[in-house]
Image (cartoon, rainbow, N blue to C red):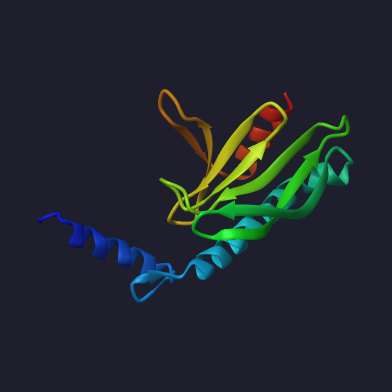
Length: 156
């Protein structure tokens, strides 16, 4: 098989068409943004669900609020973010970073005042936690268990 720019361009167009994000030869950035906003909301809903027991016991409060993101390709748009707060007032934010990033199909950050971790979404719509980037990346599939582990780590 011969590799050239046209072959690569065809492959990339096919991938984008499969996601319904390309009209003709141009990417439909409005569609990309709208899809991203739905994926972020779904992820935030999962986080709320995973932490419901802690909320019910008064061990964690969650505030959902509007969050403005500005990306080169998607422009400025409003999404949502979560602020999870412990009874001692320790905050952890779950906020969208960007949809258009290298190596993934979106990034959401989970951060405390001292640290930040990335949640990356892949082509199959699976999320993973990036525990470390160097010397070699360490990822873990995002699940209720891995998210609770991340919260435990951030709270200390």
